Length: 289
Image 1 (cartoon, rainbow, N blue to C red):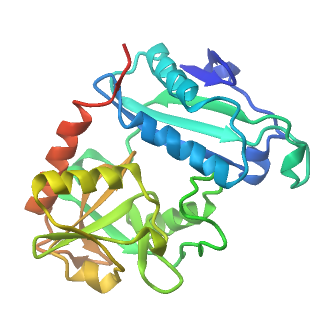
Image 2 (image 1 turned 180 degrees about the vertical axis):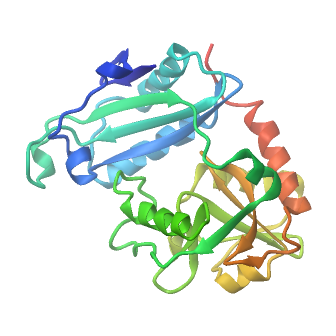
């Protein structure tokens, strides 16, 4: 595997960062996950813009332009011969010694991994996921801005631990007011009486790229979509439910906290979104060749 690291493609065994890197020591950095479908990078420009927005929000200067980073992503995918896969792009504050002071880091470091990923077993895309509500809450925006995709992912990891220890693959996370925010790595949508509902980003949800795609598809499919506060009750009484994310794509949810959602099977509206997303993802994007 070839890894892009600070300006050059190197073998996986040579892709190394300093033990004094602030990303390693303090979770000081940002990242993006991006998909490749049919030798096209899906929504590349949107992902890179969000990467730069995240960096700007934490006062992290990326020493390349957005256009350059887009080109490096394509080069990395091509070097690894990927037709379909997953890209992880990470920017750290760089090496700066011990201590929190970020201004001791002289230059940011960036690496790009182009490989494959399987977030959930294939059968769950056909039969749906069973999820739980976890006790771990999403941090308040004043503590950790949910729109920044930072390397500090411990909150999400601990929620994932709860899910796995409870025998589930995913968990719904609430904010401190008890409203649904998102899952450990996905946005959540419910369907009730033909309308799609999803939490507001102000409730702690990441403003996901795939989330935006669902809004676009809803307009094309003629399905009304609403952003509003959701509680667990809204999910319990929903007709259908699904999750979205770059790694997860679009996946049905059929059970929350051992209570069936709808008839306990992926519903017809969810299927329409899955089919529409699959068609869009495999027909658009930045070409590799």
